[in-house]
Length: 167
Image 1 (tube, rainbow, N blue to C red):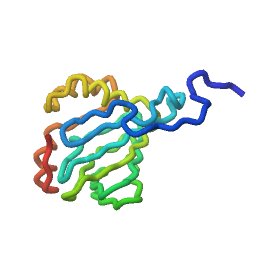
Image 2 (image 1 turned 90 degrees about the vertical axis):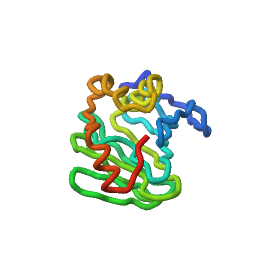
Image 3 (image 1 turned 135 degrees about the horizontal axis):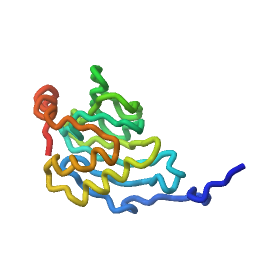
Image 4 (image 1 turned 60 degrees about the vertical axis):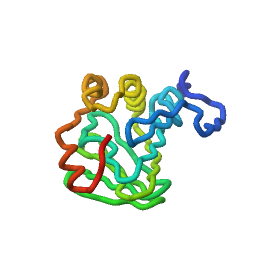
């Protein structure tokens, strides 16, 4: 059996705040498990989302699936043409090659754990955090690198439709 050189074979505890969390407007990014720790099979990110906040413009991943587990509050999502609202303890599957977005519909903080498979997209957040000044245009140069399409023009309509703010 082939043994990977990248996988951490020791049991690991990831402590709160261990991977230098960042704030991108109304969504936080707390890295938990990097792809380099899983032979790029998956990565895990913790996202606190501020009340009544759209987390991202409508977007489309060419490579990775995302699985969101709601650990606190509720999360709304537009998955293709379907609108869902998931409660604490629920999973939302956001498959690759489907336009989607997500948000916090409530007046209290929502927190989700995002499993990204395959790994790699977690690095998008690192790179955008380095240039973030609250303007989505900062992300535009990273979209090709990460196989991502973003519809920035969707933001005003999404905010109006769902009663949200966007940083």
